[in-house]
Length: 232
Image 1 (cartoon, one colour):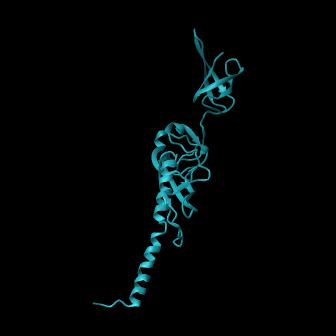
Image 2 (cartoon, rainbow, N blue to C red):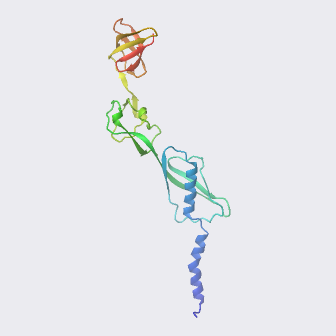
Image 3 (cartoon, rainbow, N blue to C red):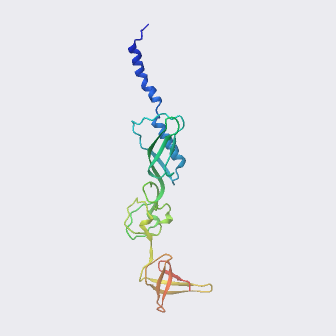
């Protein structure tokens, strides 16, 4: 029989002491789970998203909470990008910390499949729909082809660019000096006359037109290139 000396018991105590200390500490994994659960239950962002938690300081040692942890935000808002989420223990040795999460969001957006020059008109051939990360973009990016088709770009854009509405303008269908057809339609008859545009015009815009027959200046609505309409 091996005799257990005082040194044996001392070493045994040292060996097991850290294990007992760890059992009384809140694991960083459980804090991360509380944050992930809170985000999943409260996020309200379009499209898909992914969450990356910023690791806690490895030296952080918090008492084990007797009840489930409570996660919260100060403004009840979860947004894309870097966001701060609090976690607290409300029982026993109470504590509270703040964690950081990076939320990336992805949406189907309209992108250019071909480069385009300033002043060009966007056609369906220029466009494609792709899933892209939009976390750091302004909210004026296009998600439907109809939002950008037949619009005019205000600067040169490269292939692969996510189209932003701020870089687009209504295309000028008629330019000053263009010869146009003036259409006047009434219940019982319709007439067409020749005219000259006195100003540029986009679709639906009211512009000044000079009637070549009478020489009068009239207001007419732009319908399409080369065609305007008057109601009276």
